[in-house]
Figure 1 (cartoon, rainbow, N blue to C red):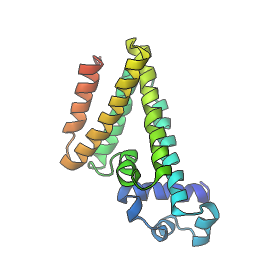
Figure 2 (cartoon, one colour):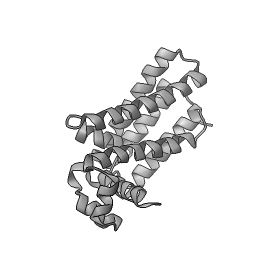
Figure 3 (cartoon, rainbow, N blue to C red):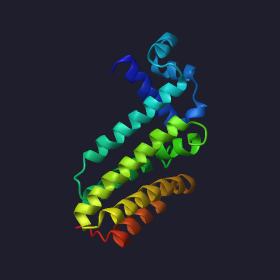
Figure 4 (cartoon, one colour):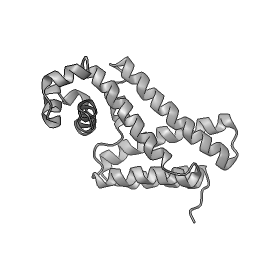
Length: 185
């Protein structure tokens, strides 16, 4: 991992844990063990770094998403893996995109646009699976996929508040059993 990648990875972890506004450049540099000059060699500002962190999380999301088969089972496995990780973190941190959306959407237009690209892309990938797996029409699949992404973000927020997996189980039950009618083997 080169210095730029290290700064991005450390920043991603710190922003995810504490929020963008609660992490300063000095704490990033200390955690990454790099001198201040290295930061400004790679990034013009903290906002510039933020965009790179959002791209980092986007890339990580779709590496994981693409590791599952493009089917309803693969979709349940994708969300299941995310929920397991979230539970292992004791329902802390949540989804970095949801966290950034709440913290930054009203104050940073560039970040908001990148966050929207992520939700649009995730919705699009889910819609493709819904179309091929359930023979849904494209428009209906796109709307259901958008709803699934919204529900996902909502249940993550609810689970953070409740510190239980109840909302995650509700998501799985209502999305996959009631809306999609997927039966596990």
